[in-house]
Amino acid sequence: MLASLPIVMTPSALRALVERIAREAGAGDVKIASAGDDAATQARFAASLERGDLATWPYDDAYAQKAASPQALLAGARSVICVAVPYATQAPHARGPLTGRISNYAWSVNYHRHVRAVLKRIADELDAAIGAPVTRAVCDTAPLAERAFAERSGLGWIGKHTNLISPELGSFVFLGEIVTTLDLPPDAPSKKSCGSCTRCIDVCPTGALRADYSMDATRCISDLTQRTDAIPRELRALMGDWIWGCDLCQEVCPPTQRASPRVDAVFSASGVSAAFPDLLALLRMRGAEHRRRFRPKAMGWRRPAVLRRNAAVALGNALDRAAVPALLQALREDGNPLVRGHAAWALGRIGSPRALDALSERLASETELTVREEIALALASWETFALR
Ligand code: B12
Image (cartoon, rainbow, N blue to C red; front, side, top):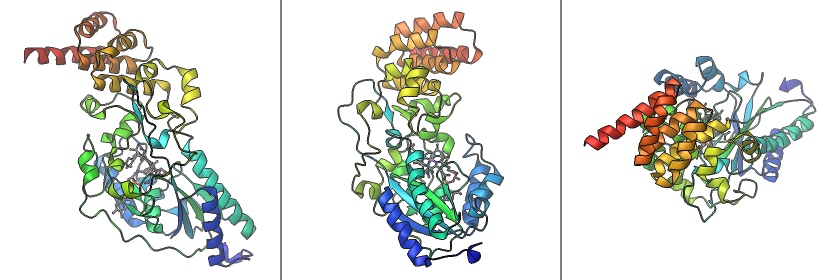
């Protein structure tokens, strides 16, 4: 326990040490929260589960309870050190035709590795200063409501887009925490808020955001690009050209726009295709290319078929007949029914005579029930359209 440790530094000296290492390691800001349970966050989380907002995620009430309790991560936790690490927001120029969009958080290196490296430097120094392990670093994968503790620490406030907004850095920041048994002096929460602004709610094409600062994650475009099953048909046309993540709600956020753009070399796009990949090439992408291009990034944890499916949806939304031959090839030859089904949808949406003939032809030979349904629905939607 803390009291029995041979502390050689005062809490304020430890705090200054944390601040210095965090800045040196690349954090844009660092603040301290107390590690007491957060009953309000637990109640919000439980309400989200109750509404089905998180149906695409394996969360339950036990997880919600843990997420609001740093003690569950580290016995004897007294403080949570919260860091904000800003990432690049300036897209490369010269976007080509038939390209998709990747959210800026996934343009470059996997942020988990980068943020954890920042956290590890701070944690190692603290453990060394105390002469015993007093820390547990967290970024994304452990059960902790990171935004809620970041807000408690004063790093910023939670916006209506549900992201943490730093008054200086905006919302394009990653969060990371060190839960510690050290009793560090906590910072005061931010007094700022979104006021009457509803730009993020208004811009979201799928209506995922609500005025009470909650979100139906099952409608969030970022979530739709990451799920592994079929994307609900009624939401596909609303996804536009996003093939991984989505930045719409943050791009229109005034404090995020006001924050000076950071061109952090670590998170900058390595080239145009890192932000705007060629959709026809993506539709053909298999394992080896996926391992090379995407595995090292934050979007590398899903199988290549998920990206091929997303490319098919974006091509359908491009409404460009130049995509028909590639979509036809995917419909006939892709080994994954998920991709064949979404290619059928895209062909139905583009609706050239050639695409419709090919869909009818494929219906005769396709054996997978889910794909047959997609083809039949694509053809039916065209019949309805033609009758009008
Ligand atoms: C699952 C997940 C998702 C899911 C679900 C998101 C969701 N809203 O729940 C999906 C795939 C949709 C997603 C998308 C994105 N994510 Co995400 N995601 C997570 C993850 C792993 C868990 C979130 C979670 O537990 N959700 C459950 C809900 C119920 O909890 P919550 O959103 O944290 O909300 C709690 C508190 O914030 C608080 N609260 C909420 N609203 C309010 C309002 C007020 C007034 C108050 C006081 C409190 C409060 O109560 C809530 C209930 O406990 C976290 C990492 C983590 N462990 O926290 C990253 C995380 C939230 N994601 C992050 C990022 C970067 C994104 C994207 C921007 C990526 C992208 N560009 O596509 C989008 C943003 C979409 C959006 N508008 O939210 C960052 C957010 C950074 C930031 N500045 O806030 C995190 C923190 C990862 C990280 N370590 O940096 N994400």
